[in-house]
Length: 452
Ligand code: GUN
Ligand code: FE
Image 1: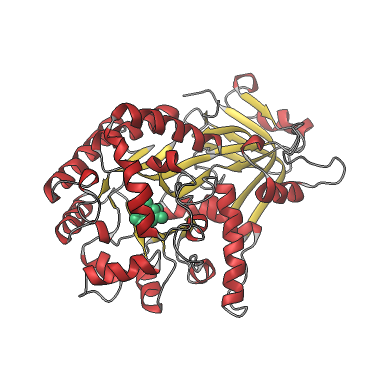
Image 2: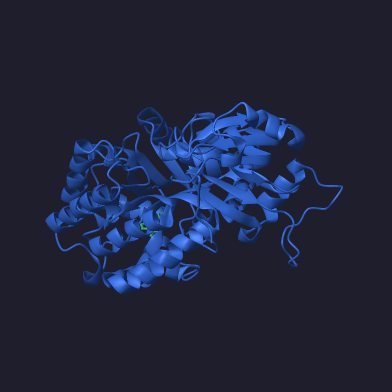
């Protein structure tokens, strides 16, 4: 644990989907446990010491961070859907529909994680890469290999990233060299990973195992049922899968499970739809499925980048509809599928997708705002992961997961403020639309600095 810390300067966070709070002369105090003990507004720098003087510890015992003008603090990003083994294949396989892309590009790539040395190398670069880009919480799919999945969990803990880490379950419709040999071995490997993660982080404070049936196409009924049993016996474990992603995927699922009308009924039947479920994509949602997802309180990972590249269509989730119904929704980079693994790019693509949705709905589903896409990337994602009591914004009592964003770069091409013209609001908007990791000066998870 570090000493107490105090940050002074501009603070921007989300209080709700369209409630962006911009605090100038803000002051945030972080205890040695990494939790936020105070958030004060409008404290000019000259009154800063006075504000602290009545507190314990004494001022000299704080580590003080004064933000420069043009810099600001935002909460860390939450990536609700991310395939760690696809870090090495990013960008490959464009123009393919989802099932062809899995067969030709993804399965051969993920099979390489049978080699623990290779897994360590790629996963190390992956976790560093996401931290560098400001992702303080990620929900990761691993490969099908237990050993590699444990390595991923170890690396997240070591490097200080909050993470859900899941051994990917898949025992059919994948090549012989890359699928679980039997239902029993798949479940046993899962139990093994659960035990490992409980051993390295007994309270599950930073790392949890997430049950990860890849999707129904790659899981026999008995495997889905076995995972549903594990979910029932372990109500602390989150669950993730792909859900109504693309037409090719949905129609093949129907042929494999003819007795189910839709994917909501299918996953619910196997005990895999709960409040802890993170459903990736949800591009095609009937009224019935919207109601089921709302009633069961599942979370949705909106992945607009992969949906408009390798998904096999130009269809991304009806986010406006989710927000209207108060269905929990956040953003996912989905890593391998698209042109970028940056949450900033996912925010931009969410805006693009929502423009398309507005046109498709004849103006009914209004385009998202900057405040809304920022919400999705922070507090919305925290809600999807059922971590809103702990992270997502700077409410007192939450843990300090934060980024210091800088708009004072001298490097050509990097987002920079215009002195005398920009306000905190305009710099923030410029960062969301045109910034990148070169603007992210520091990254904190529970008060600990985690960016090099
Ligand atoms: N459906 C099953 N596996 C995958 C995957 O790796 N990526 C995407 N986008 N969809 C999937
Ligand atoms: Fe995915």
